[in-house]
Length: 95
Image (cartoon, rainbow, N blue to C red; front, side, top):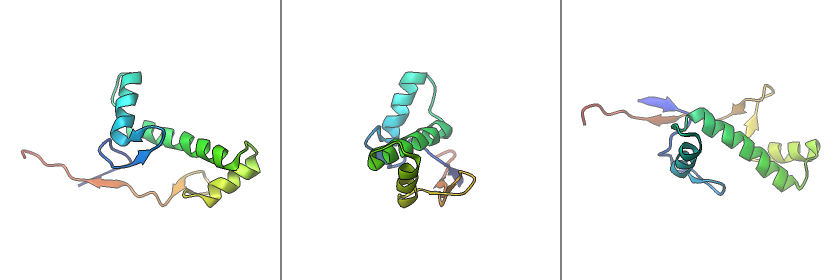
């Protein structure tokens, strides 16, 4: 068993990139190396703000902050995301 923050085989799908595998393919085409979980997490952070700007209809920090707080993300005072459990996978050797 192993934990991971992201993997291309996950079933997540977003309007900007499609599936996790489609994101990984696009990343690899652009940067010519395998997409690490840090890249996926960074992309998710940017998209969370893009979505908040869109839903707030503004770049006003108070309006955007309200949209972020009212959304699905929960943030600690340090800026860390709360309640994000790692994905769990299994590794089979010699299968």
